[in-house]
Length: 145
Length: 89
Image 1 (cartoon, helix red, strand yellow):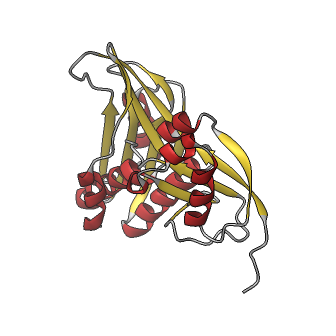
Image 2 (cartoon, rainbow over the protein chains, first blue to last red):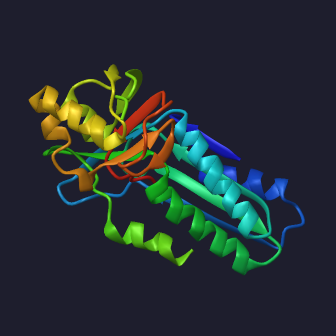
């Protein structure tokens, strides 16, 4: 399942619902991204996206993961709009028979989400606001798949 | 060679590209053959476009919501989006 939402979500609650929906899977892996404090004091974050393309890109990335690994299911939640420090930005969860495929698929989802899904982050600090630059290693991370 | 047919495309801008150009979207009439031609047309219009497209290595483009390279053809395309490299996750 793919969800793009402005509303906060509860990662623990989401994981419980996901786990219950894949009863019988031997391995469940989840990752949660959180707005972290940066030097200078982060007061918040703003996430812009490309409506339409975001959902298409996320579905394609999830579909690819489902095809490459034998997954019972994969969940992707990503927030948009205004976030405060320490809030959850996004989460992925994967369920499989074995831990290796669950871990690998979760990492694959994260790597592709970082640089192939149309989201842009802007950090808001006490000094002002600035767009977060992409990192070369995020692009490089794709080559291992 | 016959000159390319003019077409109207919806051009979208995101993140700092949107901020530099000053609008999130606009309709552009163009006879550009490729995305790179369209960028050249826009840059010659006004300084804000010239500034936004000054460093092409810092930009990505999607045609009808699919990521492509800048030499991709524009024929039949309805929506062109320009944005910096994505920073999801």
